[in-house]
Amino acid sequence: MYKIASIGGDGIGPEIVAEGKKVLEAAGEKFNFAIEWTDFDIGADRYLATKKLVTEDDLAELKKFKAIYFGSIGDDRVKPGILEKGILLALRFHFDQYVNLRPIKLLDGVETPLAGKGPKDIDFVVVRENTEDFYVGIGSRFRKHQTIELDVVRDIYNVKFGLDVTSDAEEIAYQIGVITREGARRVQTYAFNLAMQRKKKLTSVDKANVLSDVYGLWRDVFLDTAKNYPGVTTEFNFVDAVTMWFVKNPEWFDVVVTPNMFGDIITDLGAMIQGGLGLAPGGNINPKGTSMFEPIHGSAPKYKGRGVANPIATIWAGSLLLDHLGEHEAAAAVVKAIEASIRDGMVTRDLGGKAVSTSKAGSYIAECVKKGC
Ligand code: IPM
Ligand code: MN
Image 1 (cartoon, helix red, strand yellow):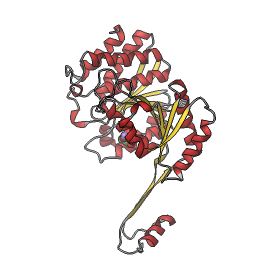
Image 2 (cartoon, helix red, strand yellow):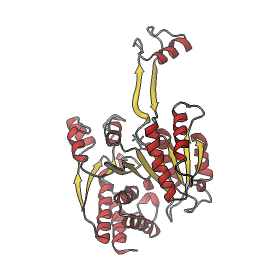
Image 3 (tube, helix red, strand yellow):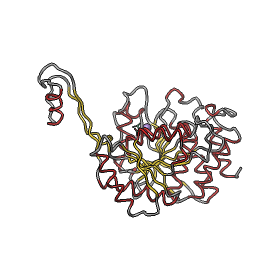
């Protein structure tokens, strides 16, 4: 019996998680395991009613679970950033989910915008660091007349621009990216281990030519870590260049490891080359703690309740969840069933096909898992 927490969240989140649960339960029937769900009411509605984002009680309860199945967060009635930072990032950080695992795989039957490329060419995994870099939340914005406490920033202001902090001059803001040796080591080690199970090729993506302190440390740690994996071929790519190569030669990549913010950016590009955000899953993993699986798309509020949302990214995230629990056969069966639903055209309108509803698309995949198709 697996006890799994679920957070539907906002917008289309609850609808797509409902489909994911159907499919995971079907996988349980087929592969002989049971799931007990515990739903958490976390999201915009509760925030608007109570001003609570994620409470101490929520965290204490969620900590009891090895996995959280997460829908999406974001609502037009709440200022952008509040829910994203206060819920999604808060959970990633609180549970120290330092690996953000994002497969970039073109499924059979899905169209990619990359001319001449097919499923054999687009099949890699991005391991995004998930707890450091520019996401640590250290920064400040100074308005006119405010004292700038940070010497280096004050110097830029005074020396470079010849401006007096106390005058009526411009505003200034800074944000700090943090990389630690341990933070880089643990996520890179995860990526090396993953590369060992795949094609034994690992690409580190950074911007060490310009942001040479933070990403210089990232590179040093990578070179040290690589010594433990002589069987893995390694390379460094700069993030600007890697966006070109993802488009031109996606077949070059197997496992990619990268700091948080670049990982955020290049996985949206990755999502597009694998057919769009409706098809891109992610896992936020702490191998020894509470992990969380989600589609990488947002809550698409305008599609809420209309039965048109594509549940595939969430169902695929469910497959990553099963993998994480060690149910590898079931996880593979879920991906195969997703592919079957695409082949049979039993997909939502964004993918063309028969333009079925969210619930029909989910049920078809669930049936496929149960009966095989
Ligand atoms: C993602 C999202 C989040 C991120 C936002 C919503 C905070 O873009 O999961 O990629 O930046 O990590
Ligand atoms: Mn993102």
